[in-house]
Length: 77
Ligand SMILES: Nc1ncnc2c1ncn2[C@@H]1O[C@H](COP(=O)(O)OP(=O)(O)O)[C@@H](O)[C@H]1O
Ligand SMILES: [Mg+2]
Image: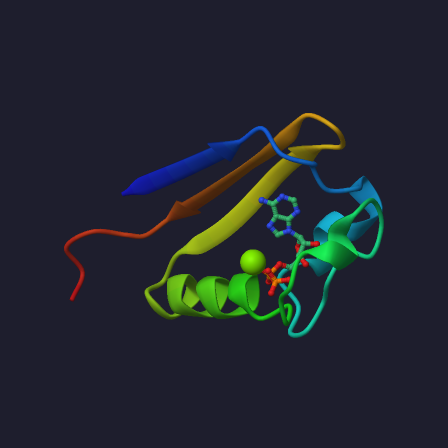
């Protein structure tokens, strides 16, 4: 099963993309300091997906938006 969520938000700088699934990591450019958060959402999400044998991935372009995709194998439990 594959679920894909697309937004037309700030986008994420390429240099930050490998780190956004790390615990407590937050991007500090743009106006992102105005958004409250703890850098845990994507960490927890990717852990849940991985523990179901799947993968959570992101593609993003700064100023254009982001696409988050996760894949989970079906019928193996
Ligand atoms: N849809 C998005 N568009 C742009 N940046 C995002 C998006 N989702 C996450 N980010 C960036 O990745 C960081 C980590 O996200 P997340 O783990 O959800 O933590 P939080 O939302 O608590 O800051 C965010 O602080 C933000 O900089
Ligand atoms: Mg978040």
